[in-house]
Image (cartoon, rainbow, N blue to C red; front, side, top):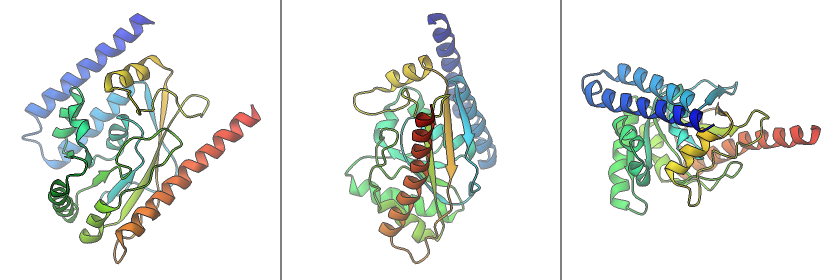
Length: 255
């Protein structure tokens, strides 16, 4: 078991080094389309190294131009979404401090925001509107922090205004991580006093993970109020996660 874990960690370190080299040597010269392909491939391989299998839930297509909002469970979330369709993320400032990975996601276009910094928020908001108006895909986690699986915190509405100003749809995305039996995976939650390194080791040592990503019907932003959009996105994701929870309860009852 220790040998297998050491091998997995070695592969992860090599993959991170490759990512550092790509960001430093290739990204400055790459077109947006090329960068997106590199981010998609790198993210998909990272998931495979961590023994995370990505599963697209049948439903809506992933929009190429939208404000993407998703529930937030783990540091894996960014890479699960990027493996489907790379986005420019808005994320909490703490992510920038993650070893190596924080720098990599910054190079991929992630914008970091400090809690309670209204001046920072105004500056970032303008950047989001410009990016969306330039037909870029932007994503953020409106809960503002990670939550345990099966729990959905209230959504902060401020950044939903960017979709209204840029006249682009909001597409909710529901994320969940399950084990081979279809139950919530116990190793993925990234809450409380869990550190980034602790989380990586738990995922590497635990049983394989299935990451489920469900793209939900887009919400029209034109003429909407940011609080209405936030609540509609929250309700859509809650319903999608609730369906999984109901399925999980049925599975255990049947067993």
